[in-house]
Image 1: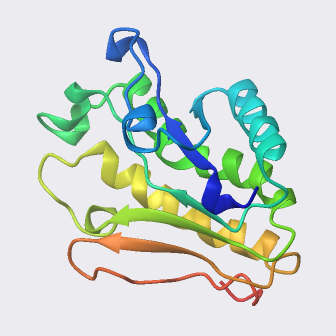
Image 2: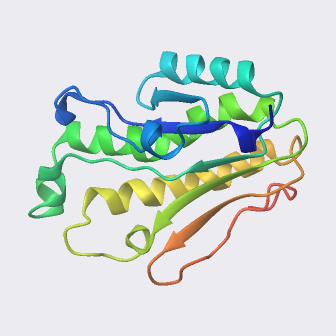
Image 3: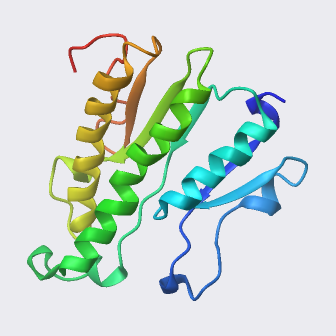
Length: 179
């Protein structure tokens, strides 16, 4: 079964969501296999891709379009961000791309692309974006390093797309070691 027949549903399951998983999963793609994945858990990511490999022989595209920070880290001043809120924002919003790419890359046997969504707040201060701006800057840097590592193995592109001002900026070409 090709990727077009397998809906991949990355989401965050946290105590902050009152133990309920959120996502579009079953509502949008009822006819496709849905496998949830808590991106803050390496074991769930590994299990997720084991399920994907049972459904399809390859992955052509992985879209990383997720982010999370505790609400209190987005309110008030950035300097008031707690260590735990900072860690959580980095883990879910940036490191998850690294962990997901590590598991997805071996299934990109026909080339493939990894796309990460980012935001203007990664390079300019946006009031109340706070720790998410720092996490998105980290995501962008991670994208460049992943492109450097995966480029020789995957001739297609690994890039990020920025929403908001400067929308659509693609940066790291995986085919080149100059990122």
